[in-house]
Image 1 (cartoon, rainbow, N blue to C red):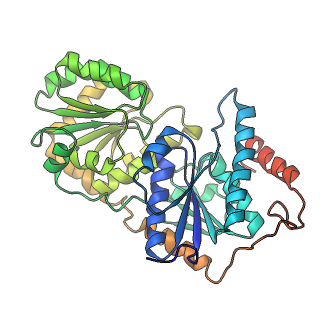
Image 2: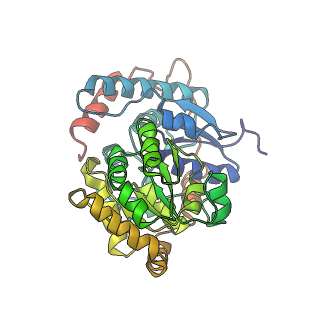
Image 3: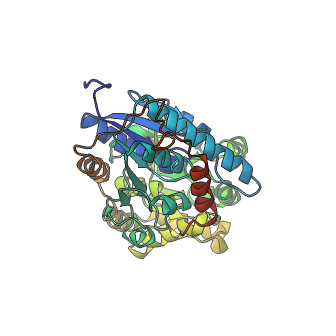
Length: 404
């Protein structure tokens, strides 16, 4: 064990969704193995709070950030400002040696705050189309890491490394019957996993419920593991009960490695973190991209997998119960097709992604020390003056001119 106070501190801003949080945790584990102390900056959202319950040996900072949705501009701005101040206060107590932003609405305030300490800054973008926060931050960070090669041309950072998207080390193919038993499933029955990412997906839930009777009739020996998100759990449970289909229905599952080990095939959204986990575990999937995702990035993620034969995709215009049943039955009953998809998935698995990111951060940061500040010369400005006007300029640029 290293002395936490003397160890290099790396701050990882990774809250908001599982797609940002779990890859950040994977990088944090790699950094800890290399003698670093790790600070996690997350959001107050329930998905973050549930996911970190099992995390040990990490400093946790909760930022009051909120996502920008229509009609909530003032709330977003207040959350951004308050998160900037919270990150700045945390860094003033112990300046980090480096900051890694994993994307999303919690990532920009810590990077901007860290610049006041002359901290080396980094970002990871897991999607084919970078999000607004990462497009903005790419003008400021020392280095960027990307999950898809095509993403690099959309970032302004000069130093970009193709790493893939990190997955946690427990995502290795293991004993399917044991995983099913651990989840309350029957050990010897083929299992269809239905999921919508860390927060569920009402659209997928509704589609599966409409298809359920036919699915159960066509696949009478199959069982279902359905991760619904919080608001749909009860009605989805009722649907399986009414169809007399054997299912385990959960609002959320932190042990996703068990779910993927249990799965014969999956129905899922196409967030980049989920795709990286499917690749690691070789789980063939039918992807239904979230149509309202920013810049339609889930569609582009899914298309990249489909074009290499690593997944099937059903667009919103084809998302009928009949089409879903047809695709699921073919995948669940054809061992040859599942093997073909699993072989293509192997090419998308970057087993050393977390290691490569951790080592790049340490290499870039070698010999660099964070700047400590005094009360007279606060982190708010190199000259001891408050930089709220500068923060307002950053914020306006991030919101109104995300491509600039």
